[in-house]
Image (tube, rainbow, N blue to C red):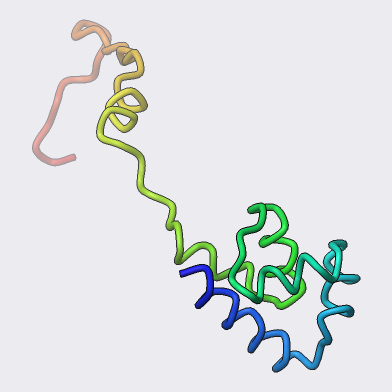
Length: 101
């Protein structure tokens, strides 16, 4: 998987018209780091994100690890807020009900 990811990063870099040195400089990493990533060697997640930002691929992380909806327990906790009672009007002070209204 790392090798495939590295090959894809290399193709994206080339398509963007960047050399390894230019990508490394813009991402704030060493050229050797970019070389190792493209060769399929591991790197830190923060380094990968830096490189993806320069290649304008960071938005793709949403599809890689999508945000999940709130869990049922979280939804219940949100919903179980204390209810406030609505004051009812007294029947003596209320105007009598009429069909014509």
